[in-house]
Image (tube, rainbow, N blue to C red):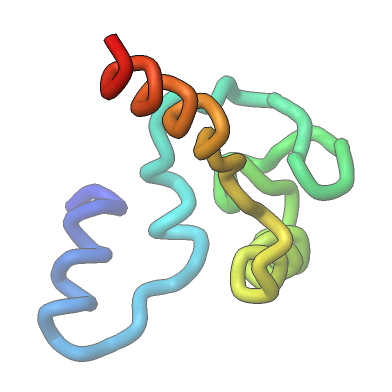
Length: 86
């Protein structure tokens, strides 16, 4: 059974899947790409991170709100005014 299959089977049984199983299913990350937290080479087990610790640090940053998507409200407000006037 593949890693993804084990993750779904574990979730269905109520067990918490291991971080490595979920992290291995991340698409689009090159093998050996640097860890986004510390810059060391990533490990396949924790991809895109190098260790479980770096994965936990990244998760903590998400929970703390350190990662944010910029808003484009100024651009949309100007576009709305142009639409109303035009």
